[in-house]
Image (cartoon, rainbow over all chains, first blue to last red; front, side, top):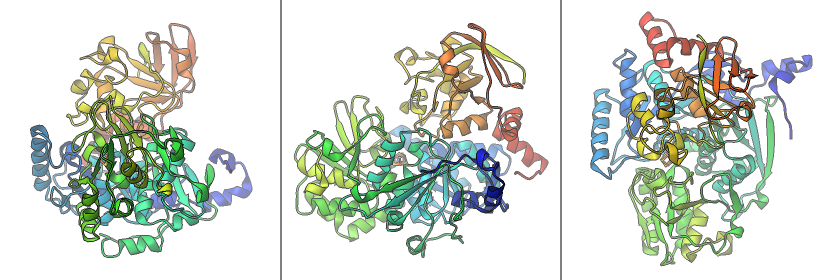
Length: 440
Length: 176
Ligand code: SF4
């Protein structure tokens, strides 16, 4: 394990050259988008943003704040992306009214890309699948899981409405260049082991919001090279839950293929220099990575699934910006094909976007799942934030493929939430108790 | 900035953003006055009533690691603290998203290692922004703090990022 603190390295004359040469992918992206040749961790820079995302329950405030800055038109109507995801379809009158006000404000500003009910999806899924985030560029969003955008080699960052309003007006955002931590992942993905298991494994290893606060996390190595875009999104998505500034994976052929035909602009294939500086480098071999589960209430309280086999639960949930993609749906369909969800379990699938929904339909997965006794709901954040569609009630024990399990997250404070991969959710739904998909 | 003086509340470990502003208020408007009514409602029962936290009249919060963590980006958290009369927060470390919001709102989130071990709820503290010195006047201990970066100080002097950017736009000055 290497451990290098920037201040220490400046004392060595033979390393000074390295300092002016080697940059991480995140440093390079921040430099390129702030018109500089070089940036160093700790510096504050104003960068140009490729896109700014805001969504239903914060968007109106965001636009109001933007207007209060002076300009009446956003910096680029094609680059302010508006999405309805947390509140759709509205579960009550209050949210229905909020949505109406939101629609009105988006219309007033003549925003080109408005993904409203009917064309909706979870904002982070939309941003990537519709090509609004691009390799080598910086995108921000008013929701914490904007870290997802690192999957395509972009710097994706969660901000508050103030930052988004400023970016809407100016096309810019301020950043402190983060120190970097590298996770070098080797080995081969074993059957039924998913990127989510690696995320949860790292969560248990590094601790929730522990000393990775403010850092950029870079995922490299053969196991990342062989990972599909869905898995890369899962991995980058949960870096916010580690307290990190962003998670990022260098763009490659998988990225290019994914973006073909959807990218909404030019991009730049940027990767870290060989002599880039990292505060720490962790090596993880996934050959013996087991399906991993986070116990209720704390994300970093993780165990391998074998330790929980037989644990009772009554609600199964697959969806969210972490695990609501086609590849996730395919995995659960494979497990549940020609079988039945256990009678003691209610299972809900919420595809992450209308595109995902349609693709799952065309692939026949939805038919498989409906026949297996899975309820399918229209794309949204659903019960993930406890707002609607399948919220948890008193006494519920939920096994969720989402990203957060604190008390009350999905509804009742008297419910428990276990987090796992979609494979573990499906295998467990089949058996009626937490089960290891490798033993089916 | 002149010296600030007042009592402190010492936070327990794991004071998360979603405990500072509980779920039912996430979709409400961002407004210091409104958000302060129920600020800290999820932290403990004593605060889980209208003005439960605010009525204590604290000026400072002292915490250990990762104050306001848990990955929520909502600005209601910082707005609620400001509305409740909090003028600075001292901690070993802060969660990134709320640290950023605090800078944007001009509320000093000040890193001061180990301070929580030497303060008790109700102690009177003073904070001298220019020197960064924090004094616990109740027990006579003194702490240094990490000075904010020049940009952060500028934003704070302007009264937050909105004012800072608005002034730049009005004057036709470039940002960054
Ligand atoms: S799916 Fe859940 S975590 Fe993702 S944006 Fe929606 S509420 Fe947040």
